[in-house]
Image (cartoon, rainbow, N blue to C red; front, side, top):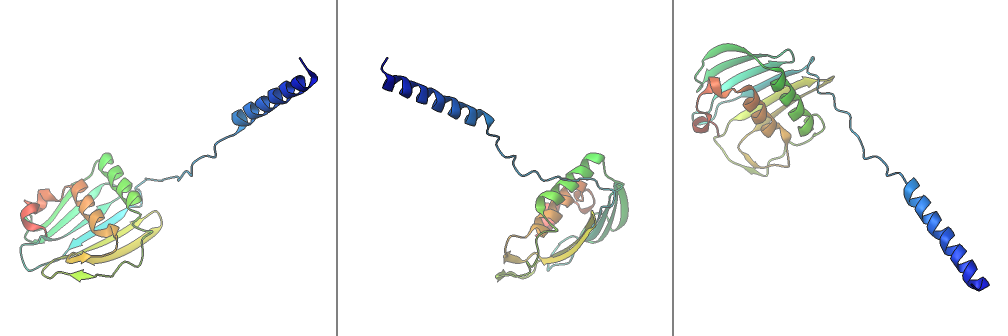
Length: 175
């Protein structure tokens, strides 16, 4: 082997070893990890639905972190008056998951409505959880609004706690 070939072979071997070491020693930076606390000990929620020009259910429902639920039906609900219930740990976990996923406390300043339809009800959603508190009232006749978690979150909480058992056939009554 000529001296030039020997130098080239040593150089290539050193280069290959360097590349091998670099590849195997490189650590991928960890993806951003967001710690999520889904405990519900201090959770308090109130959902209030108002009247419309039709058979919209008018009620208020309260949810607490201990799993207690109070439903107060006022009009267009199968239950008129108060009824109490208790949520399972799984239902409480689902509510906490939905609250975290919706980023309800992070979204601010959405009270614009580009296209307003009349005759709809409103929803008021008040949530206190993990040292944060927020109250949002939304007219559900707004058909063009920037992305807003409040209406969908209130519907999802209603589904989890099964307010339909006190409202009746919500498909006929809800806008």
